[in-house]
Structures are given as C-alpha cells and as structure tokens.
Length: 570
Figure 1: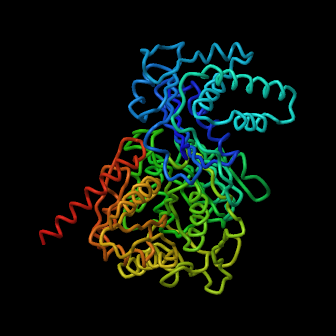
Figure 2: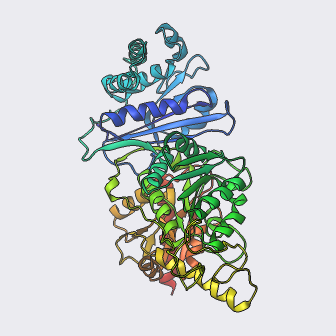
Figure 3: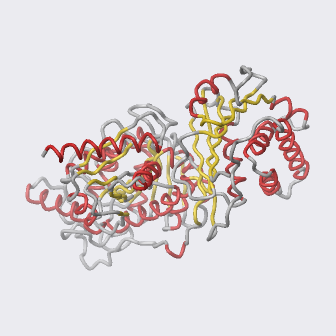
C-alpha cells in the first residue's frame, strides 16, 4: 500500500483538466485524505497546453510531488510533454479519440467523450476519467460517489438525475479499465484527522483572513493571478459599512484605498507585478502621509506582461521599495494556504498599528492551489485599530519620533495629509532639519512591527536552509530528507520578511552560510540578507513552476559541499 497518489490531468485549456484534478482532490479531502492541487495554464481564454495536478496522501503534504503515479493525457502534445515525469510503474490514461500509443507500455486508451455520450450525460467526460483513475489507484468509487452526491444535492429540480448520471459515468470509466493495469501499491485508506479541516484555495484564505481582522473596504482592478481575490470580495464582503468596488485601473485602485484609509477605513486591494508598478507613486504617498492600507501582490512571472498565469518570487525587491526615494514597506509573505489566512490578518493589523502601507506578498502557486487545512480559530484573530486622535495634540499629526494619534476627518485634530515633505501639522517644507527629522520618524515607526514569529530547528548547525514564500514546502521536503541522511543542516523560516524578527536576524548573522531557495533569477532575498550582514546564497529557478524536492535537495547538498570545501581550505 502507498501513502501517496499523484495524478496529473493534461491537455488544452478548456478541456477541463484543472477541473478534473480539483474534483478528484475535493472528493479525496471529503473522506479524510490530505490533498494539495497545482495547475498551470496559458493566458488565453481557451487552448494552449494546460495541466492540473492532484496530490493525495494519508499524511500532511509539503509539496505537490516530484513524479506522477497516473498521467491523464487528452492529446498527443500533453502526453509527449508530461510522460517524462511519470514514475517507474506509473500508468498513462490517454484519449483514444485523439491519438494512439504503441502497444507494450503501461497505457490505457479511453474514449471518454464517447462513453460520456453513452452514459446519457455528454458533459460527464471528466467523471469517466476520474472513475478510471480511481480504479487504477485502488480507490473505492464510493469516495467519489459521496462527493458527487453532496455537491449536487442543492435542492433544485433535476439534482437526482445529475447525481445518477455522474455516478453512472464514474462506473463506466472504472469498468473501462478493469483487468488492465493497476498501480503496484494502491493508496491506503485515509486515517482519521484531528480537528475540523476545510478544503480552501489560497486566495480564499487570504480574503477571509483580512475580513476576520476587520477589513471593511476592498477596491481592485482585474489582473491575473489576483482577480480571484477581487471577485471573492465582491461575493462575500457585504453588509452595512462595508464596500467593495471594481476600479478602472490600478492607479485608481491605490488612489481609492488611500482615500478610504485616510477616512479611517481598513482598506485593501489586490494586484500583480505590473499593477504594483503602477501603484508605486500611490504607495509612496501612503508612506509619506502615513495612511494605513494593504496591497496584496500575487506574484507572477515578469517583467512586463511576462508569464501572467505562472508562478514566481521576483517581486520582493520592488515590494520593499515600490516607489522612488527612501522607504521600507512592511512585507508579509505566506508560504502555505494555511499561512495565507494568518498573513492577511497580520497585514491588516500591521497597517493599522504603524499607520502606513503593507504588502501582502503572495504568489500564483499559493493563491490558486487548494489544500486541506485546519479550520482557522477565529477567536485567535486579533482586530487591531489605529490610535485615533482625541485632539489633545491639536493639529500636530506628525509630532514625535514614532506612531502618533491618527486624526479621522470629521473628528478632532485637523491636519494636512501631505505627500510633500512636511512639518508636524503637515505643512509643506524643504528645510533640511525637518526632512531629517521626518525621515527618522517614518523609519522609526517600523519598530512597532518587530513581533513577527519564526521557525528554527537545529540552530547549532553552521549552515542553514531558509526559504521564503511558496518555496517553503519543497524546501522543507528537501531539508527533511537531508536530515534523515545524517547531514548537519539548520532550518529557519518566517513569513515576516520586513521587518525581519530581530532574534532571527541575529541567528542568521552567526551562520557560516544561509541557503535561500527562491523562484527568481537575481536571488532577491539573499541580496536583502547580505545587505543585513548575513552570508546568504540563493538557489534559484525561474521556470514558472515550483521547485521539485529532489532537484532542490541536490542543489542544497552541492552548496553544503562547496561551503565545507571552503572551510577546509581555510
């Protein structure tokens, strides 16, 4: 028996390959498996190579898996470009209506569209294929039947017929594979999981985390892969004193949430790299005028249009300083779907606490993937509010060398919210001593954000592995294998990238080498760490896809050997 099953549905955009993987994952999660999905597709509405992957396990999943147990190929291109990732003993299910494969391999041709028509439901081709997958993997069809029954029991006329039709298609797909091949080790039955778990995507988790922390205003402009957060807010952020709006541009989005933050609202937008570039001037104004707001930047490949539907971690440097001049924007970057909830809540609270802009730095691989996570305990979510002026300092909004009371329009403490350099009441000035004083004030405010936590293990090791963002899972998988093989390697991780927790920075500075896996060309986070006195070196990848555990493990070992060789020569 096997503890894991990895299935990839590959074909063209519009053929339902992403939907097929998500149905299989949702059905598995419903009966108690741990699941994780991943999808990659082109930017056009229909057509072009696409695939969706479902990873299913009896234990927690760190990554989507390096190799496939089953490949579902709906056309020849999908077969040719994905079969190399099939493990030894794996099985191919191919669309025999589109192409044929030579006999002798572990491949089964299925005419899914034809079988779907024969089932009486021409739209059930996905169910035909999922039935075949379940049969080959040794997964009881009852698992999928439970999901179908629950999903389509909506209290509508015709629900029963839809359920019956899909279950019939499921069995037809399984029957088409009986007596052919099977995986050498079918997946084990799920084991009971402690606590209530939910299947949720990263963009949903981030949206709910922000709402739980008291977000009341969301204004955004559609851009891949951040549009899903905007549409989720449109569907769910309702009620008195709440507002969701769709703007005509990213510049309008940042200007609108600037106004909302100035008016006392907890405001947020979502965008991707090109949109963040357009928001740079507005973020500079939020920094100078000290206006709370959150920008969720869902990273994709760049520059320019780049890879709009692929994943990357190449916006860190621009997130830290998205505009001209001296600024240091707080950045929180979740590494899992579960962390996406807590990171968004923290971002809203940080913005309120220090009274300024915060970047929630996610990425396509987290925003669009589904995971089963422990249902967040809302009683643990803090809802911080900015300190509002009671008029005791009159109109001296910018007085002092740190956070000061915030005058809400209509209340006491009238002032000028000025993007030009200004004195304490907000009046424009070019005096050198005032610019120095106010620059120190703005940077000193970051001191109230030093409460970020971090993970650390084997802290005595001279070399440490420290991923960030969505590379956390693959890095953790590589780390676990290296440790099991007896190597001396430390582990550090935090989603609070700016400001870094001070104790974490102290520990990193003491290391002979800190290895940073990240999905970009420049090695952006290691550059930041080196500027802070840490001997950090990156392992980079920029394919638009996540790291594979095995490949990352080899790269980490190579850097460890190189560091050991340098020390030996010394």
